[in-house]
Image 1 (cartoon, rainbow over the protein chains, first blue to last red):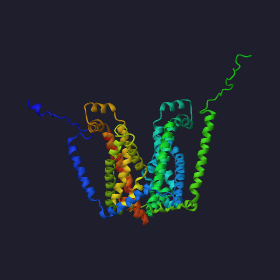
Image 2 (cartoon, chains in turn green, cyan; image 1 turned 30 degrees about the vertical axis):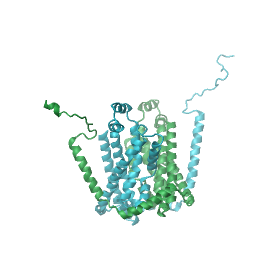
Image 3 (cartoon, rainbow over the protein chains, first blue to last red; image 1 turned 45 degrees about the horizontal axis):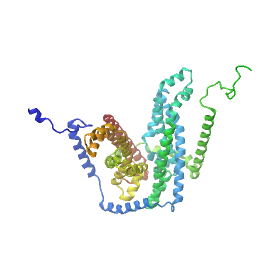
Image 4 (tube, chains in turn brown, yellow; image 1 turned 120 degrees about the vertical axis):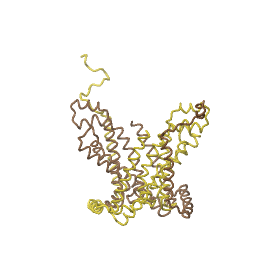
Length: 269
Length: 277
C-alpha cells in the first residue's frame, strides 16, 4: 500500500550523458565556481565600450556601404598575392606531401621511415600557420614569398596525415592481388594504391586550396603578404568602409571556393 | 574470302597489351597537367614580382641566427606566463560558451526539419553560419580590438563569433539527420512543438552537441593562444611583446608553453569525446 504511494506519478526524462548522481551535483557547482573566477578576472572598461558602440556602428555602416574604389589598387594587389600564394602553396604542398604521406603509411614502408615521416607531420601540424609565418617572415623578409612557404609547410602536415591515414585503410586484398603478379614496390603504388586513394586525394587537395585561401587572409597580419596585410592597413587607418569591402570580397571568394570545391568533390567521387 | 577477315565496321586492330587508360583519356590527362603547370608558373611569376631574392638566399643564415638565439629557452620567464595562460584559457572557454549559446538557436533555425520557414528564415540562418565561418578568428579579433578596445573581452567575442558558424553548421547537420519516426511518435502523443524538440530531437542530438562543443573548445584553445598578436589578450600578447623586443629566448619559452597547452587540451578533448560516444 505504502509502495504504491511512493511510486512517481509523473515520468521524467532520465539523464542521458552524466548518469552518476554525485557527478550531477558536483559538476554544476564546479562550473559555477569556474565562471565566477573567470568572469572576475575580466576587466571591462565601461567607458571604452560606450566609445566602441559608436565605432561599431561606423563599422557596420562601412560593411553595408563598402568602398571598393578608393583603395582598389591596394585591394587588387593584395588579392593577386593571396590567390597566387594559395595556388602555388597548395601545388607545392601536394607535391611534397605525397611522398611523405606514402612514407607515413604503416602498410607500405619499413618502421624507421614510418617514424620519420610521422614526426615531420607532427611538427607541421602542431604549429599554427601564424606562428610559422612570424618565423618565416623573419627569415625570408616581408612579402608573399614568406606566406607561400608558410602555407606550403602547413599544407604538408594536413595533406600527408590524411593521405597516410587513407592509404592505411585501403582494401588490402587488391594490394595483395597486384603483389601476387610479381609487381615491384613502385608498381604496387601505381596499380593498387593510387587508384584507391586518388579520388580522396583530389578532394583533400581542393579542400586544402580552400583552407589556404582563408589562411592567406590571416598571415598578412604578421607581414606575409596577401589580402590580410591590406585589411590590417585598412583597419589601422580606421577606413572601415575599405575594410568592409575587403571582408565582403574575402567572404565571397571563400563561399565561391567552398561551393566549387564541394561540387567538384561530389562529381569526382 | 577467308572466314577470319574482319567484317565492315569492326576494329581491325586490338592492342595486345593492357594499359591503364585509353589514348583519349591519356591525352586529356596530359593536357590537364600541362594547364596546371602553366597556371603554376604564371602564378609563381606574378607572386614573386616583388620578391627580393637576396633576402631569400639569406634565409639559411637568418634561420641559424634565430635558432641560436631561441635555443636555451629562458625558463625563468615561466612564472610571468601563468596569468596570461589563465587569460587564454578563459578566452577559449568563455568564448566557446558564448558561441555555443548563440549557435544553438541558429542551428535550429537552419535545420530543414525544425526551421519555422524554409524560404525566409533558413537562408538568413545559413548566411550567419557562412559569414561566421569564412572569417578567421584572428580577423574577428582585429575588428573587435578596433571596435571595443584591446583586452580579453575582444578575444572572447572574437572566439564566440567564429564558433557560431562551426557549431551551428555541425549541429544543424546533426538535427537534419535525426530519426523522423521518433519525432513523429512524440508528436503523435499530442506534444507541443517545444515538447517535440525537448523529447524528440534533443535526446537524439545531445551526444553530437557535446562532442561538437568539446571539439570546438579544443580548437579555440589553439586559436586563443595567438589572438594576443592583434591585442586581444592572453599569452599571445606576451608573444608579441617578446618578438617586438627581439627577446627570442622568451619567445621559445612561450612557444613551449603554447605547445604544451595545445597537447593537453587535445588529450582532454579526445578523452571527453570518447566518453561521449
